[in-house]
Length: 93
Image (cartoon, rainbow, N blue to C red; front, side, top):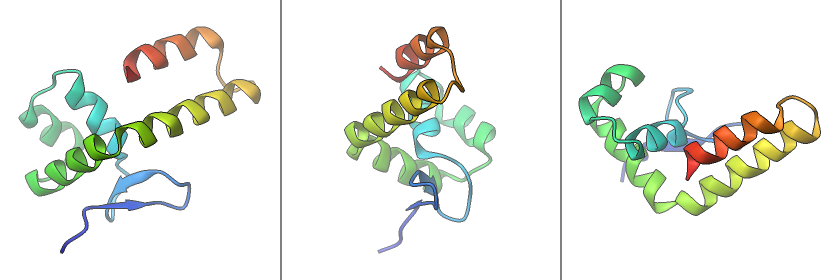
């Protein structure tokens, strides 16, 4: 069985041999962007897209928690402001 997603050194799910984050593809898809748009934006092929989307939807809760942890860490470290946090949270729902 071929694997299309791997966990990078930072603990993020990415498409194998790329720096393309699965959650970026998943949220773009969830927001209603077409398959063709995703293929063009991320410069990936259909197999990579479907692998990323399958991983995203199968692991959505885990990815959501990781996103929340990353956002909270950025707030705690003063990297991001709380108004930006609200925008990020709205986009991830």
